[in-house]
Length: 257
Image (cartoon, rainbow, N blue to C red; front, side, top):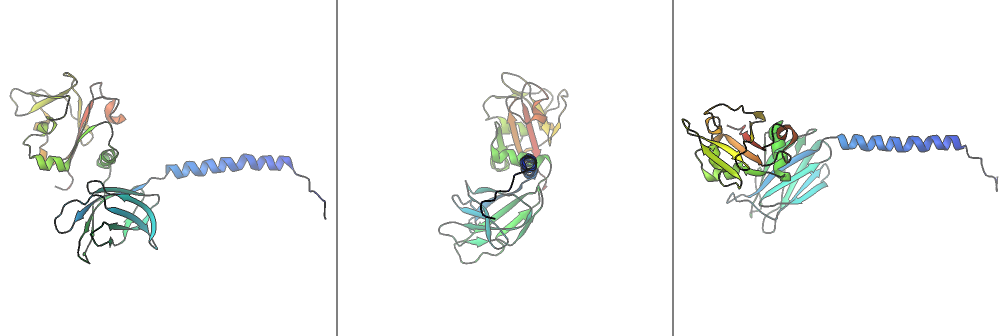
């Protein structure tokens, strides 16, 4: 009826105004709690094996819908998907033929490694190789590696390039690290910050202090995936930094033999 205004039930309206924001907050909290799926990879020249910088790598879901895109830095890229499912990678660089990978399945919380090869020829077979999924502490190490925390990190590539005979020698060039030979041992003890002895971990397990036993007696460079050096306990991940006030050194061994 023209001119008729229906009375408003303010109690009912008020009830809705309380519930909607709470429901929205709950949905946002749930969405933030969902784990991300991560793809870490390298973009390589198929003929030379060298890394390709300034390449573009795009993550695609079904229907070639773009999910994420990034540029390679020294051939390295990291992409994340908000939800699990089947995805493809597309890689391109001026002077190379564009390549789209075969589908890969990302499960909740997955972190997988890939190698992507581009060629100046028209076709490259098997452009993507998916390596084993990383789980547990080693996955956390790679997450920190890409975020570059307050740590000195010795990567697997650097370890292989240097050809050191002892694990402690890999730390020799890091500012603030001191090495002391141990009598009766072929190895050296490690100290930080004017002789303060850091906590030492191998694959997340604290190495107890034993007389004349050094890290060189436990691991060799050929066994190592990476090393993290935290000179300040406050900068180290909480599970490692709370052990003592002198920082921490984390050694990670290879899982591929």
